[in-house]
Image 1: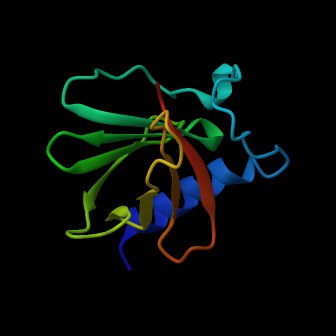
Image 2 (image 1 turned 135 degrees about the vertical axis):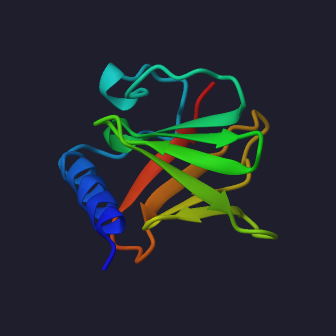
Length: 129
């Protein structure tokens, strides 16, 4: 058994355990949010095509090269690769799975979900403006 996937799963579970008592974010993304749901660390936008803010202070940056970078609140980063030809867009790596739903409104905002590959835990994400 590899240590990195076990540590990744443990870190993701710990992040999600803290949001179990909080309500899921409202569908209206125009409402102000607290800094606890924002990016864990400031990151450069260089090479970033899209950025998503997720529950539990987790962020996902979809990179220009086709990969996605997950940033956990503790500063840990995980690189995910896009699944070729996937619809909706799917990125996977380590024990994480990130899916981007197509925009369902005229504003073009997309929603996404970050989960463990076994589907046991999931964080809701919204596209950052």
